[in-house]
Length: 305
Image (cartoon, rainbow, N blue to C red; front, side, top):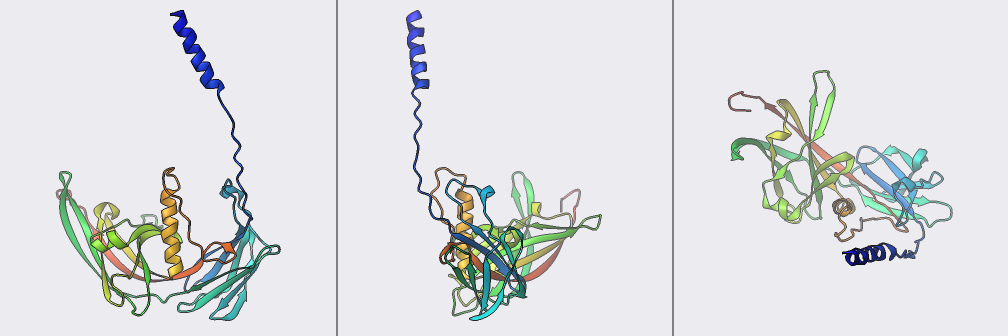
């Protein structure tokens, strides 16, 4: 017995003593300028300028740049020099207009000039929204759903990209406005095959999709909102149809893939799309068309709503 404990003690001490520290030499890449700006038509352009982070640095180490020269060019003509503010923020005084192209030039002493180009698409109107209630039996209870068919006309002759978000804006008993984005599911095979659910500009969430399967045609986007995403009383459902340029579409797809993979140690690394030359970041915009549906959800103590 004593011999057994002697051998066991030797094994344990060997395991804990065989520790070797290995230094990994990681080449630090030269820092570059990062230019980020996602703006909406009929609003001003805000740009944030910073330095890129190293592989072992986190967001707490971001270095904002307040001495940059930021120029905006609209349709090939100089528009303005943006004024600087705190945290590397630069603000325009002009309103971005749909249907026009925008270039940005960012110059920082000691760095190459960063440039990017985007075309701000015109909004695509929502033609109509048809709604209908359906009932299904699931998990030993009746579930009611609000089915919505959102119809719009895709412009022909170009690759177009879209996103659809829905918010529910209500007024509480104290008179305060509450805005919550609504989660919905698709009831069309197209959504499963071609669309991606993810984060959108302006802190929204929705479906991101191209016009590959309906180019130049009228399209009906079929979705379902279940009862748990609706309030008892009046629901002020606002439908937002985003018109996206290709660079914003590619950025949103890659950004949401990155967000889904960042905490998975076995996921393949995702490179977030950038349209900046001589630097990193995204400079692009979008347009929105909106329509509203008022839906009254009443509660029946015997049957539900």
